[in-house]
Length: 558
Ligand SMILES: Nc1ncnc2c1ncn2[C@@H]1O[C@H](COP(=O)(O)OP(=O)(O)OP(=O)(O)O)[C@@H](O)[C@H]1O
Image (cartoon, rainbow, N blue to C red; front, side):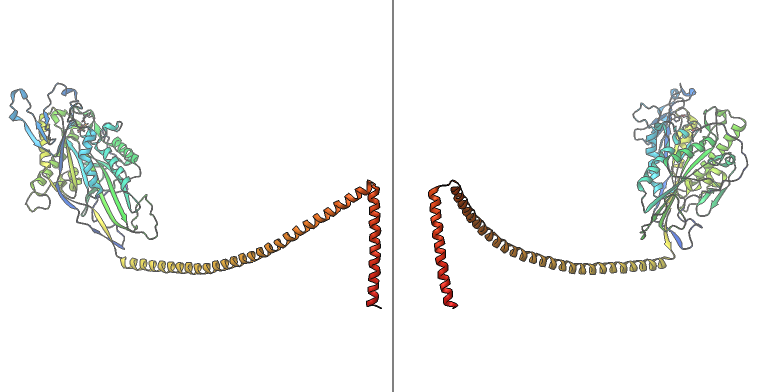
């Protein structure tokens, strides 16, 4: 909703295809025949429209020497409008008002200065939480022309510190979704962006040729009014928000006026539709595609909510703006719709306890302007709504008017309920039967597996016992063999010892013979003779011995 250039003329063309009915807890027509959604009515809260007042710095040249007519109390809830002509007035001429919050953004050096970030913290954070909880929510900026509505809602996208409520809300919502989603909980975000210019609705995200087509407003008995044929884009990454915001801002009608160089000539509504689906236990463990939701998905809970971020065109006095021609027509239409908004708020605030009370209050004239018709749910129905009333620091009349408008708005009571659908399956019994059968089959399969494993383990044990037996036998066999071998070794060892001693003896004998031969070689005559004698003696003995043997033999064998 940053402002760009002057408005363009309408050009008739084909309607875009997508439509955006507001979120509701009992959406009709889309559910599958096998299922039925039952709305969960427990999460219902009743609260007033919250009102926050923000005063901007003196930035217009005409304000340079003008006194600041606004004071804000240290409680952060009181705004005081000082008298127009302070020199001729007494302090009692000041007018004080109480709001949910009062944001002082006049001088960044002041202790109580509220930056864009502070503004989001106080205005947007809660709203994002409510959106995630399934409530329809709305933040709308109201105020005279040039009072800082677009700055508060959109700010400057170039500088992160200057970002307004819309880009900060997108980021906060995206971050929360990233944290909360898991295999059983899936989030789906879609955006749309339209403007109401001269009581006509234009799709700011339509292609160029279709962007000036006048769209129709329809009313769904359950979900309320919606723009027929509005383009919706799915958000798959944080940057998508920025892309569609920029696209819409390029198409928005803005113009230079005497009061504001870059004045919004239309009311702009940026919507984020959030769908959350929760899934039951999936026995197959199959994950569904996370890119898109299908109507046949077997989810057990669906939450639908829509966050509407509205930058209203500024109220203006023709005398102040000096508008003529097209600008004057725009201004008249802007004022007409804002007046209707005032009448709707007045009617709703009259009801005291809101839409459910029985007082005979006038029927809010929602249909008297496209703006109030489209915001019907956010102003007087199923929504949690915050109004940021923007004021300029030096304009008495316009500021007084805005503060009165804001005071009235605070009295509007809304009954919001979380749009949660619990899914009842008609085919539950059949599903249960199938699941039971599936689990029984699974059980039988597991039993068989266990039996198989048990029998396997018995035969394994037998096998092992057989191996142990064989190993025992083998080890016995080897032990026996070992003892036999040991015995054999002992015998061989003893024989070897004997052999060695025998060999020693032989060696000794051999040595004796060698010695004898050496002696022979040395030709010792005495020894030779002695040897000769011995030899003869032996021969003689041998001969005698033979004679004796012969004699004996003759005795036994005659
Ligand atoms: N809090 C702020 N801090 C600094 N500058 C601001 C602040 N609020 C508004 N401004 C500046 O004041 C000027 C008017 O603000 P802006 O365009 O947001 O007003 P507006 O209410 O949207 O006007 P219109 O209704 O005509 O579109 C802009 O130049 C804007 O940057």
